[in-house]
Length: 180
Image (cartoon, rainbow, N blue to C red; front, side, top):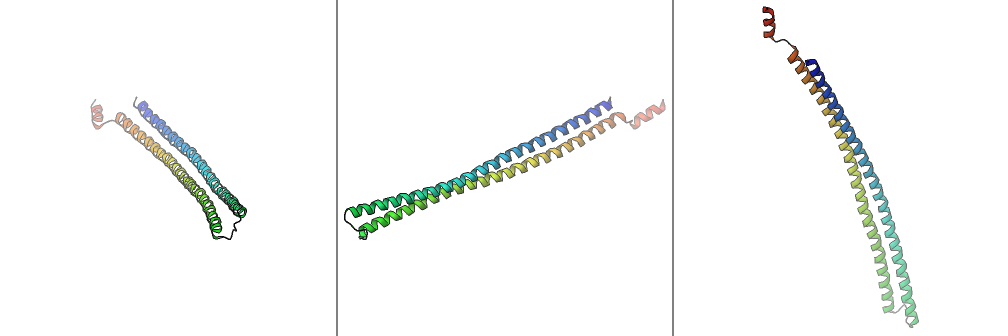
């Protein structure tokens, strides 16, 4: 009977070991999957960053185009009224308009680059999180392996102790049997 109990203890240890290893492997696979999704999101953030830079550039080009049209309109109105573009008031107005156009173009570039920087930082954060997730998955697998070995050794030791407890003759048993 004690042999059956010892065998059951060892069997339970083996089942526990298998369960722990399976859980560790599942955690590692899950971490790999999550890390892959985080990396994919980082690539999308990088792509969005490039789009934001392009949007800023297009905005700057449009601001300069609109500004050139406004300057042309100012020159045409001045010419139609008989004023010369070399007159101080007209020259100042055209110069101020040109400066405003340059400001709007640079502002558009700045905004596009600022949004792109935020997206690049997001991509870096996602990649770092992916690395941490992979590391955690590997650690979970290692912890499960160590736990599995510990369970197996513990159940083996417990089974051995149980078996020796019920299958060894104590000194009193030996002397009692010798007197018969």
